[in-house]
Amino acid sequence: MDYNRFISAISKARKPNPMRETASYVLSGPPTLISLGAGKPNPTTFPYKSIQVEAKDGSKFTLDGSELSRALQYSETSGISELRSWLANLHLKYHDPPLMKTDNFDICVTPGCMNGLSKVLTSLLSPGDHVLVEDPTYTGVISFLRPLPIKIIGVETDALGLNPDSLLKVLSRWNPKDALDADSGIPKVLYTVPNCANPTGASTSMERKKRIYEIARTYNLVIIEDDPYFFLQFNAKLAPSYQSMDTDGRVIRCDSMSKIVSPGFRIGWVSGAKPFVERIVYDQQSSALHCNTVSQVLAIKLFDLWHTDGFERHLESIRNFYRAQRDAAISSLNKWLSGLAEWSVPEGGMFLWVKIHKVEDTREMILKRAFAMEVVVLPGAWFSVDSKKSSAYCRVSYSSASPAKMDEGIRRLSEVVRDEISSLSP
Ligand code: PMP
Image (cartoon, rainbow, N blue to C red; front, side):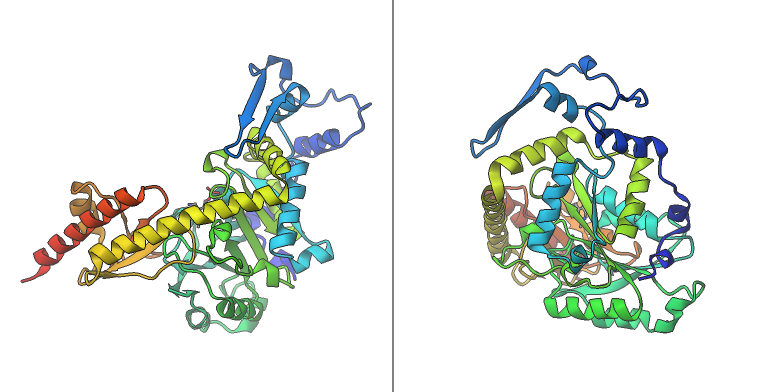
C-alpha cells in the first residue's frame, strides 16, 4: 500500500516531539542511566500513599511504593508496555490479523475510542476530501466531522448493517482509476461500526463484510473499523472483523474498554499498519501525551490476576447481562408498541432502532411529548449525516434501566406515540 496517499497534509507535517522521544529512551534505558532531562514531577510530592482495589469477583491488589509512583507518573505515549503486549495478544486471539505476521502492525492506547477516532480522522482527512460514513451513524463521529472543510457522504445501512450495493452506488460517480489522481475527489476513507452499531444495533453480516473489503480494495479505500461493541455480541462465536481479513493493511481498528471495563477509565486503542499508527502516536505526543497511567495500571493488574479464563468469564457475564436486558426490552416492545412501531432484534450491544408508524419525523414527538411524559429516547434524525433529513426512528437503549423501569418507559412511549398519531389524524 502507498500509505503516503492516505495521510492528511496536517498529519504529514507533524514531526515526532523530541521530549517524548527522549522520554521513551529514558524509560527503556539501563538502571545506571541518570536523567537530568525530564520535566517529570517528583513522586515524593504526590499525595497518595496507596490504592487498594477489590474486584467484584474477590480479586484484590494494592498499588504502593514504586508501582504507585509509576501509576501516578507520566508514561509512554502509545501506552504502558504490559498493557500493549496484553492488547497485542488479545488481537492475536480474536482477530489474528494477517498484518501481525508481517511485522507491519502496531497499537496505540488512546484516552478512549472516540479520542482515537478523532486522531485517525485527523490523520487521514485533508480539506476538500470526501469521506464515506454509514448513515445513520455514531453522533460522536458526525459531530467531529461536521465542522471540517470536507464532504461527508452517507452510505445506507439496514438490519444487516452497511449495505455494499449502496456503497457501490455512491462510488459509481468515480472510476477506480481515479484513485491514482490526487485531485479526483474520490473518497479515501470509509467509516463503519460493524457490530451492534450505535444507533441501529445492526451487525454487518460476514458476506457483506467480504464484499465491502473487496470494494475497498477496488477503490483503494481505508476502512476505519470502529468496534467498541465487539465483545458485546451475544452469539458465542464472535463475528470475524475486517482486521482479520486485512491482507493489504487498509483497516484501522478502533477499540474501547468502555463497555467491558469502565468508560471512566478512558482507555481505547487504535491498531493497524505501522505507518497509520505512527501518525496517531505523533498526534498524541502533542495532545494528550498519553492515556491515563492510573487507568492503564489498574486495568492490566486486574487482567494479570484474572488470566485469560477470568477475563473470558467477565466477558461472558457482561454478555449475559445485556442479553437479558435486550430480551426484557423486546418483550416490553412487543407488549406496548406492537402495531404502532417496528424493530429488529439486535445480536448484541445496547441499542434498539425503533421505527414509529405513521410519524414522519420523531424529533418533535420526542422533545415535546416524550420529555413531558418523563421518558427519554433519542430521535433518529440526530444520527443522520444530513441533520435536516427527517427520520421515523428513535434509538432506545436497554443498557441502564431495570426491566421494570424499561417496561414503564416503553409503556409511556406507547402513550406518546398514540397521542402523536391522533394529533396527526384529520
Ligand atoms: N464509537 C461508538 C460507535 C460508540 O458508540 C462509542 C461510545 N458511545 C464510542 C465510539 C466511544 O467510545 P469511548 O468511550 O471508548 O470513547
